[in-house]
Length: 117
Image: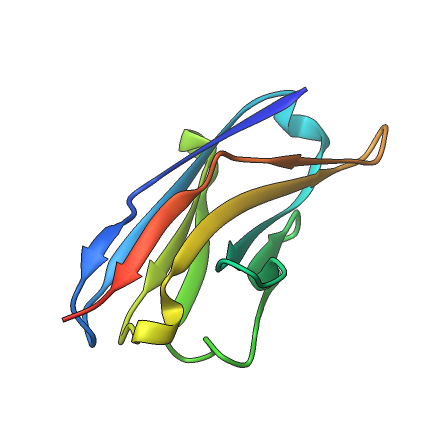
């Protein structure tokens, strides 16, 4: 089992910044990749950014150049630094872990991010 706990959401003005954190616990040695997703009411959950076991990263086109995913292995934590935030970034942001042995998917509880003046 892998447990994920997100934090760092909140209300920010357009153009502002927030940093989300995702702390992993449990059988973390099984984790192959951790991703951030976001979801707004009535829409499907969409992938925002991901970081793999070897440190490779990937981003959705809508956030490239504004969001940065990183990790601190000593703290079992993955971060999502969000800069130049736009109202359309408003969503609930979820942390996801993909594991091996066996292949499974785990989700955190979500963190609300609201970008509004």
